[in-house]
Amino acid sequence: MPTIDRSAWLKEKRRLSEERMDTLWAPIYDQNWGAVIDPTHARCLNRFLDLCPPQAVVLDAACGTGKYWPSILASGRTIFGMDQSWGMLSCAQAKYPDVLVEKRGLQEMIYEARFDSAICMDAMEYIPPEDWLVVLKNLYRALKPQAYLYFTVEVADEKEVEQAFTAGQALGLPVVYGEWAHEEGYHYYPPSEQVTKWIKHASFHLVAEIFGDEYQHYLVQKL
Image (tube, rainbow, N blue to C red; front, side, top):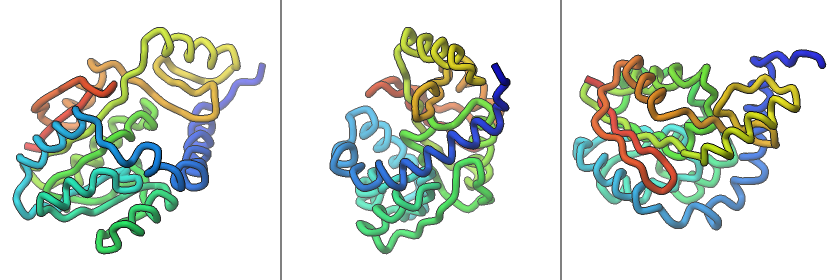
């Protein structure tokens, strides 16, 4: 069986993911997933907002359709939305035309000490292990000193993760353990110990780690 180049394979997975976000998920996201914020997400977001300066500009990295914007705007903060999907951004702007947005992927962030705080929610599962530290360092660079970042990491059943890895190998895919990539989409589920190591390597200080709503919730600070 021919060997599949992993870099090219991941690039194509990402392209297809963006395409599906634009054409399939963006038109139906709000009616299916955008109306309700799960309790742990809401609690952690409120804790994050309590730590933000009153007039903070909050970067919502991989903002999607702006699911979390009502809570942030209601707190008096300003939002800057960023996402690699034009479809998702278009939905967000239709609801909140005064919020500035930019089409950009997490791996391509180039901001420097621009934001008072940031969130990256329900998105890191799309990031392959090679890019995890890149993304965290990009977020670190984008923040001002002492700023907080709140991000989530989806958690999957361990047996299902094992089955996905086995299925990917059987198809000859260049998968690593933790990747769910044998079907159309792509997800990566890193263990919490690995996430903690990446947080440290990116120079963030871990403030809190909480499990809930089938996600690990991380609150970190740039010192």
